[in-house]
Length: 127
Image 1 (cartoon, helix red, strand yellow):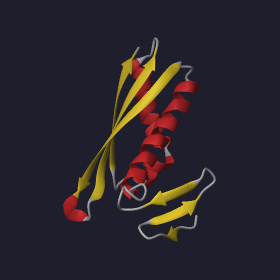
Image 2 (cartoon, one colour):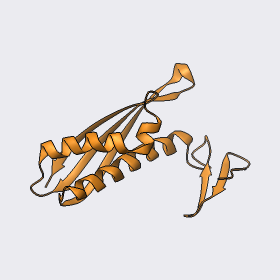
Image 3 (cartoon, one colour):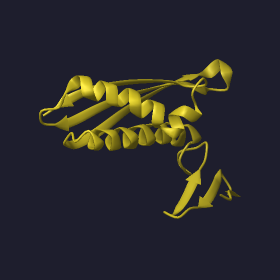
């Protein structure tokens, strides 16, 4: 990836399109938003694959992400709370809980920030 400086922030051209990153939301995605998005999307995508392999029929997964940052230390991200809202019929709560644990161990992004950012995952099932 090559990032080019703009008046405010940076941009890069990727396969999907142009990405704008800036500390000011008026000019692009903020770096912490991309970090949290990467954790949530990787974790959710890995979970989806595991549930499909277990032949669980999932209609939808929504991930609610909350972030805890430490202003005293460069406003660093210290904790990401992911709450999965999983929609489907006849879903086994214990299988989903175990699947989330397996997904966490197999998500490359979650493993990349392990030891630096705490990731707390919870879920609920809706019909």
